Amino acid sequence: MTNPSTSLYLQCLIGIQCQDFVLVAADQTNIQSIIVMSDDEDKLHNISNSLVMGVIGDHADAVHLQQYITKNLQLYKLKNGYELDTPAVVHFTRRTLSDSLKNGNPTMVNMLLAGYDRNTGSALYALDFLASCVKVPYAVHGFGGIISLGILDDLYRPTLSQTEAYEVLKICIREIQKRLFANLKNFQVKIVSRCGIKTLPTINADTFSK
Image (cartoon, rainbow, N blue to C red; front, side):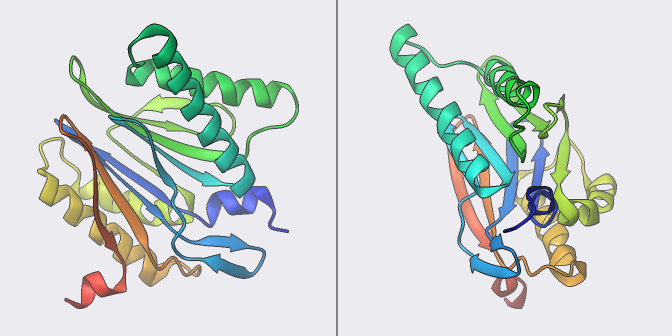
């Protein structure tokens, strides 16, 4: 079996928040021990019409947490007639992670929550398995994220257009695929804006051969 703490770092999440949108990317590799099980794993989950949850880490914990959060948000909407906004979802998610940590059975996942609210605009939050939470302009998780952090420090601007932010992501991912020992072939990309959630073209080796 894969050590849960190891799986937190051999996967990758990248998020960029700009004035009117948030761009998130996640590798699609599912690794068990030394075996690559698949390279089309979905790690970016639409948990509402304007909120994306990116989750990496232990596969069972990731699936359970994503389903738990999604179903509770759907129940809340059915009972109250409206959806929770992004900060409320973040606090609920953090409380869930904190409770599992206090019970001695931590949920071994790291997360990015990207949302858009009509009143407050776009927002990006980074959470980890220790229930730490911070609102950030850009964020990374995993060894691949560490490689790309310097690129984001250099190229990030809150005024980036959607096309420019996507190009920054491509630069980050190209460096990850060039320098990281793990083979993260495909990166799923989604954008959250006032128009809702949109899936952008997957970034892989073919992206850079055009």
